[in-house]
Image 1 (cartoon, rainbow, N blue to C red):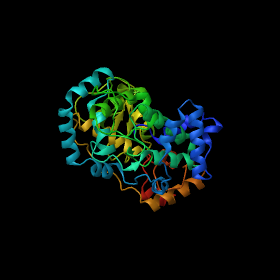
Image 2 (image 1 turned 30 degrees about the vertical axis):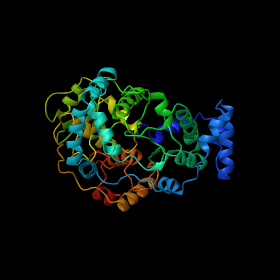
Image 3 (image 1 turned 45 degrees about the horizontal axis):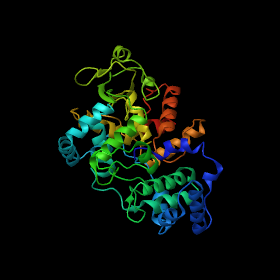
Image 4 (image 1 turned 60 degrees about the vertical axis):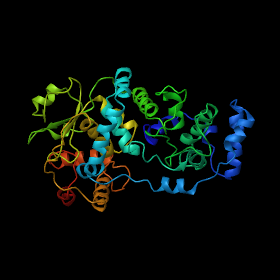
Amino acid sequence: MLRSLFALLVMALTASPALSACGGSFGSFVADLKAEAVSKGHAPATVDRFFAGVRQDGAVLKADRAQGVFQLDFTTFARRLISQHRINAGVSNGKKYDSVFDRIEQEYGVSRGVLLAFWAFETDYGAFQGDFNTLNALTTLAHDCRRPEIFRPQVFAALELYENGDFDPARTTGAWAGEIGMVQMLPRDIIENGVDGDGDGHVQLKTSAPDALMSGAKMLSHLGWRAGEPWLQEVRVPAEMDWSKTGIGTTLTPQQWQAMGVQPRSGQWEANLPASVIIPQGRKGPAFLAYPNFNVYFEWNQSFTYVLTAAYFATRLTGAPVFDAGNPDPGLSGQQMKELQRKLAARGYDVGDVDGILGAKSREAVRQVQQELGLPADAWPTAALLNRL
C-alpha cells in the first residue's frame, strides 16, 4: 500500500477520544458511526444507504491477526518477487502508458520505474486487487479495538467517495485492510491525492491505470518524494572499512564514501547527495547506496527487505543490471534469530519484540554487540555470532 499502517499510526496519535470508540455490539457500533456521519453534515438518507448492507467480516480479522514479515534474506526474497514475467510486463506497461509516465515525470518528478514497481508488487499490474468488500473491511477494523484511530476516519472517507460517485458500498473491493485499486490506496488518501488521469470526471483506481498511476505519483510527492532525484544505486564496497557507518542511520556524501573505498558497481555516482550505504546481508553480500528518496519507501511499507526489493526493482525497470549477490555468510533461521534476540535482550540491548525478524532494532543491536565484541559491525547476524554469545 502507498500509505503503510505504521505511517498511519502517526496520524492516530492526534486522534480525539471520539475517534477511538470501538468494540461492543457491531450493530450498536454501526449505529454510532451513522450518528457521527450525520453530525458531520452527511444527509441521513445517504448515510442509511451507505451502511445498509455493512457486516462484520471475520476473514478480515483473521488476515489482520495473521500478518507476518518475510524472514527470507534480501537475495532470496528479491529473486522470488522479481520474476521474468514482472520484468516483461513492466517493460510492456511502460510502453503502453508512455504518455502517462511522461506526464508523471514532468508534473511530479517520479520515475516510471518507481511506479511500475509499486504497481507490480501491489497488484501484479492490476490483475489481483483483492476481493474483500472494502466497506466491510474498514468497518470491521474500526470496530476492532487494535487500531480504531486508523480505520474509523477511513470509513467516513469512503462515505465521502460514495457521495462523489466513486465508491459502491456493495461492490467496491480491495485488500483486507481497506486499500483500493491498482496501487492500493486507502479512501482518505484517494480523497487527498486522487487524480483523474484519464479525464472522465472520476477517480477510478480499480479500472483506470492513468488514474491509479497519477494518484500514486501525487501520493509519493505528498509523502516527500524529491522530484527528479535517484533513490537507489548499487555499489561495491572494499574488503575492509568502518562497517559501523553502514546502514540507513548514517549519511555521507559520495566523496566521503569514495574516500572509504566505496564505488559504483557500474557507471558514475548518480547524484551528489547525502546517502547511506546499505548492506542487507553483511559486508560480503550485495551493497547499495540509498539516496534521500529511499526513505519515502518506508511510508509505503515498514519491512526493510520488502522496501529494498521494491526500490531495487525500480532501478531494474529503468535499466540497472541484476545486482551482484556476492558471497555472504549464511543468515539465521527464524528460531535462531529468536534465540539471538533473547541473548541480546539479556545483555541489555533493545531488540523490540522477540519475533525471529531482523527488524531495525535487532539490526542495530547486532551492530552494537559486534562492536562490543570487536567484530566487523555490519549488522548481519550469523551462527558464529550466536555461538559467540
